[in-house]
Image (tube, rainbow, N blue to C red; front, side, top):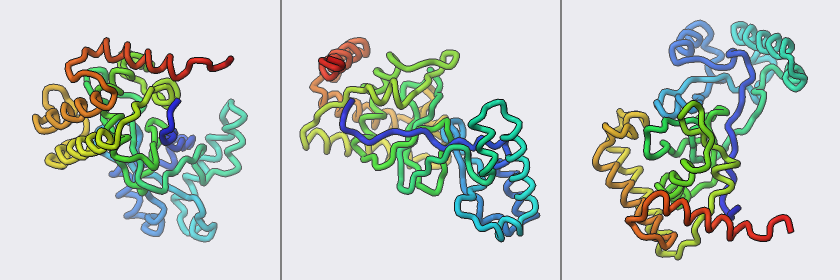
Length: 275
């Protein structure tokens, strides 16, 4: 709907669990087959991201056959992946058996990116959103937004975007089910002045600074409504205020009124489509 960076799903292993490992499994593997450690990279699905507990995965893009053959335990996993895919009832998955060393769907970010979990608790006011470095591979339960600025981060983590998300997103049980199509692609972004954009960038930085005060806390800890640190809550309120100002909305607007304004903007932006 607006001129903003694309948001894409993470990579999907389609591997029967053979490309992924917990930290404990990774340590055990490296102990027995150290030559295979160079193929391992941190990997996150939505819960891993919120809990800040990455798993590990074998990333074998461009791996040489000679190096792979030197890792018999890894080769066993690759054989298991091939068998898993061949036994699938889906033709597309069966075809992936020809490339058992690769993820079924590869969407790798080569620069720092914003990550948003696909599923998040309805008890949080803000979906936990954060930047990840490109070494961390996002799974298909994470959305990736490469080339995103602090301004984009500030708007996405604001209560304006959260209000829109709560109004239009799907649900898994009662949990929020974010989507890059229904929620993100249809979100009516504001058109801030340079000063308003700078203000959002500043308050977005304030949120990251507030989080950095608690390096041992996961995003689940930080965004628990009862345990949320006052410094982080204050930073989010400042960011909410800055984003509302960019939308020319009052700081004390109710969520329902905010949603009504966003839908009015959406209707205006989409007027005439299909004519």
